[in-house]
Length: 139
Picture 1 (cartoon, helix red, strand yellow):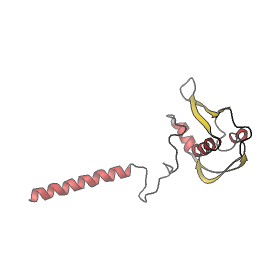
Picture 2: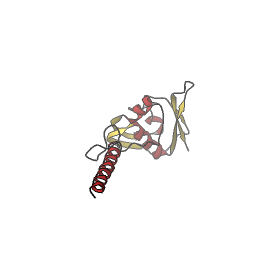
Picture 3: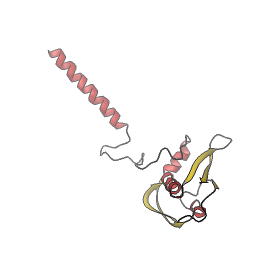
Picture 4: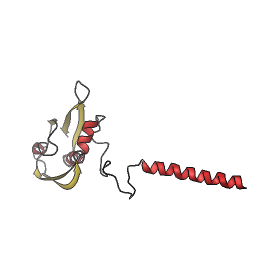
């Protein structure tokens, strides 16, 4: 009976060990909140790239305040103005865009813009295989 108790104890320890490892790799810190490396509101399916410098740029967090922005103005605003956009079919007389946040990523800003004006945004690669433009298409 002693062998069965030792086996059960070892099995329990192994199960706890596997659970602990999986908890450490889920992007949460010990308090259960998302870590700074993995923003809670990240929208991973939006503007997906396998180019790490672009992903880091898109996921960098800022304080942002936009008031009365039109589609023709918004892409020239800090902090999203540092890349090239190919704009087509933007709404001419659409509603004005407002956004205020003290902790938002460029990816989240662009997602908010796309959702607000029903725009499609995709990353296009250049001849070197690296991202070169964000194509923005109105419906």
